[in-house]
Length: 500
Image (cartoon, rainbow, N blue to C red; front, side):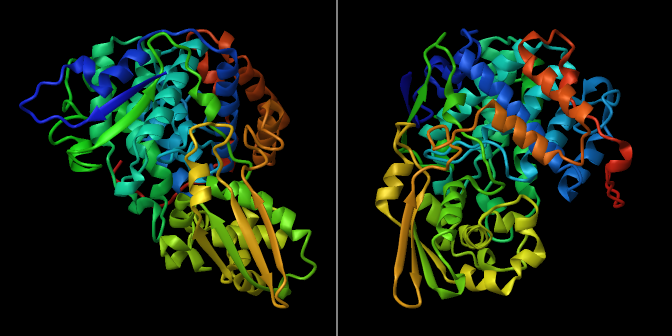
């Protein structure tokens, strides 16, 4: 790996393109490096993971709307939509929009956390859509996904967006553009311009993930993927981009992030170096914000130590800066304590999540978020007794550059009414790659079967799992085999009409 120093330059100083971060990203996207077997296997795992959560969310409102919008943009040789007959195809950017929303809706796919946040699996829907429309092979798709993960993971390591309340999709636009560039074997110059356009058009604020969180949380990464596809299309036609997008005097860094005196250190592999960043990412066992995964495991274990939950006086959670300020009481969001809040908001409330997991000794992607569940009096009592605190020890663990030592856990102190304290801590989710029982292929398949139960029949499930595990051998034009069709009668519609 090479650590690239990224800073702002005044306009009077000409920064050669080959010294710009966007060019360095484009170089690794066009280097045609050798494939790593473990990385390839993980690509297949993540496609299974994405399909699991996408099929489970097909009849949720945001996904219904995105699908109906996409179906207004049909194309004979386009891309497929999750759940829809594969003979019906749409323009790839609209397939990316709809499928990306389906993948993101339940907040139940993979994650990578470092200086900033990310869900690298958000790269897969736009890349798959382009690969289908361009009739690419399974190997081409694999290479594109590995590039996209490499770019997003390393941008997340080097550049913090959250500090300036910029949504993390600003790292997704460039990664999608880079991944498409790899798949289509575009020249470095073309990818360079596309990365810059994609970043420029995908800057938005974090209000989408604060306060009254709406369905836009699911739409945001899908929108970034769609914009990245359009950026690549324009550049392939000879158009350019704002440049230098990272280092310019009025660039993203200068005007939106750390400013003209900023210095970022972004790691990237050397040209030709095998891309393995996907192996540093991790998926979710539970449908909840990733920083709650270890705490759900911890709550399940603590439940066995408490005979009567009515004896609880208060619960203190000592954790990292990010966990405290994003999903904890440090966020100062009253909605995170409101039983009438949206599912999206409750998903970002560690107080709610811990209370339910402690009470139930379990977590379910539907039942744990139901209105009746959120309004249960016993739950409200525990929920409102919880307070989070930043502990620098946990913040340092969160930012540890060593993947084996990096952790997203917490220490929990439960104080009973008689004064007794029950204390336990956990550094990593059990399903984390370095947890007590890391997710393997069988776990991804089981997650798929569990989430698609009563939606897909055995033949449909078996067919998809066979094709995806044979991804390396899928030839040009065969990527439609990764689509999953369900009966039209099982797909809900939105009666409200839009412009399209």
